[in-house]
Length: 542
Image 1: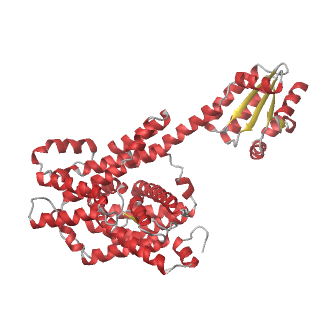
Image 2: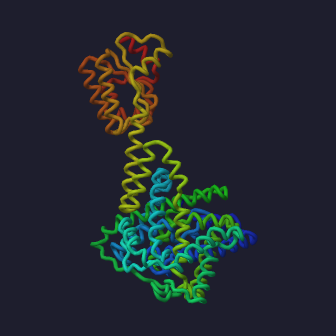
Image 3: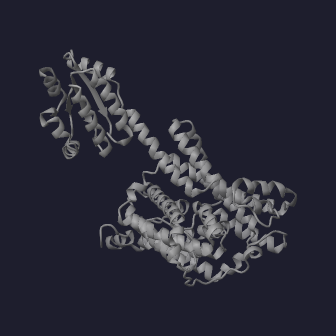
């Protein structure tokens, strides 16, 4: 088996698998399957697709992610984070476009894994993750207001502000029964854990409220009202692909892939902490990719690792991928033999469940915590949040990543720039009186395009006042092409002004780059010295 693809299931089976652990995994898998049932239906309905597509996703993707993934306990399936993306893609490209985008996203995820980008996705800044997660939570909440209040609106606008405008203009059509059902659903979902943590409150709420609504014939909208009957079979459905239009789906596919990759690896990291394990990030990405390539062929929607269901799996004793496989098989049996009754579930009940999901996703404590931090983090948080809510999640992720990178580079550049006065006093304290005509400047941090201009401007100023300029580079981990070009230009200018330049404390990697960039030849190798005290002595001689 190649190193880049090592499913945990094979590792578990090779190490030995006891009947005791099998019984624990089966129990955990059945519980997670029950937990996943209402969520799979709710996520599908909120995304604008029929309920069975959520169940198909949970079955097919859940099975593949557990069988091929790099985590022992990861549970895969549809998640709340994808609701906004799926709904937006459906609005723009239709169901066929969604299926194509999901398949492309799967191929991107496989490529991420093959190129070992699993570790890079972990470096997505926390404020960006909180910003778009909180934004998604608010958007999910806003999409459920119509069903939670039982409003009579033929077409709800997809944009955030017009959507709320439509709600306020339709308040006269509120259905008190729908409000009551939504509130009772929220109460049961949140509080049933006080009775038992083995059975999810959302499952109890759906069973109880669906029975009451149908026994007493309460006047509320149900899944059957909106979608009709729910098919209880899974069959292949190939999307119609026009190669000339494939480029149109790259942007939404990349959004699905990035969000799916981030969420699945975040879930794997959280579960590692719960079981004291270590997941294989690149294997996990490949498995997520395969799941997203295969699932749309059965009519499913995007899938990823689900943090809440994974945590439920761990808490109920699941410790191997067998639990995830059992979870998928449990859902398959429910879909085949009980799924037809799901059409009786009230839409306001699903709205109540999704409002709880939105609250749990909101991360409002983290949001408030970041608002108390640095201005850079606040800017990334708010820009990502408002773009997610008011514009589009695709733009939010793209602009958030670029903004985070730019702010990081500015921080690095600001942090690395020290004044000559500070360095002179530092040198005097450690090395005594400076020889007359010697200037010193220390570059602290990467000498790259974001900081090169600022460094070189200061070097010119100090160098023009000195006969000898010592540039300390002990804290320079690397230098890029822009840094090399700018440094070479400064050295030439200073040499023209009769200033001698000495470099000190250059590490091996940077020295290689200086040699390749022609700076060693320009200065002379005797002017690139290993330590500052040798450089200081050399400057005194000059």
